[in-house]
Image (tube, rainbow, N blue to C red):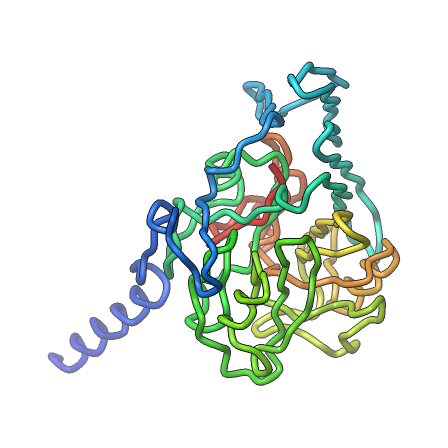
Length: 321
C-alpha cells in the first residue's frame, strides 16, 4: 500500500513538473539592456513604440463592425472588421474554403520588418508559462496575432524572441528545422544540426522558431504527403507563416476537428501556402493551439476536441503591432 501511494505521488509530481510547474523563468524586464550572444542590445516586448496602437473594443468583443477612418497623427488609419491599413503597415484578412476546411489568411505588408514581433505568456520565458493567444496579444498591444511555436512544451530547440536568445540547446532530432527571421526582414530555414544558436545570433537573427517542419523552400513544397508532426492526426487545425517578398508576409490559421471543418494535412497546408504565392512557409504549433486574433476578436474556431470552441493556453505568439 505504501509503495502504491509513493508511486502515485511520484507520477503526479512528474506530470506536474512536466506540464504545470514553471521552470527556468526569465522575465522580459531582465532582458532589457542586456546583451545576447551576438553582442547587440536587446529590447523588451513593450519597448517598441509607434503611432498605430489604435484598437477600439466593444462590449461584445467585436472590435470594428463598419469601416472607420481615424487620424492617427502620422496619417490616416482605415479599420474594418477584416482590415487595418495605416502608413506603417496593412493587414487584410480573407477566409478561404479548401479541403472541406475554413482557412483564415492575414495578408500583411509592412513598412519595416520591426513591426513583426513575438510575445511571451506573462511577459516571461519559461517552461509551463502559458496564457491564451488573446491574452498575450492584449498584453503586448498587438493588432493581429497568431499562436507561436509553444516552445514551453519542449526542453530543446532554439528560442530567440525579439533579438534575445533564450535557449541554445539543439533538438535531438537531426532533421529539426527552425525558422529564422533576421533583423533586415529576410527569412531562412535552417537545420539545428548544421548551425548553433549563437552563430545565428551573430548573423543577425531576430526571431528563431523551432516547431516545424518547413512547408515551402524556394517556392517548392518541402513535405511529403505522409509527413506529420509528433502526436498529430493527419488532418488538423493548423497555424503557419509564409514569406512572399520583402516585408510581405502571410499568417495562416485553419479550423479543424469539427463537423464544419475537417482540418488540413501538412501537405495540403503546403499546397495552400504555395497557392498564396509564398516562396517560404513554416508550420507552427497547431491542433488546439491554432488561434488567430484581430483587434479584440478571435477570428477562427479554436478547439482541441471539437466538442467545444475555446482557446488553448500557449507559451507565445507572433504578432503585428
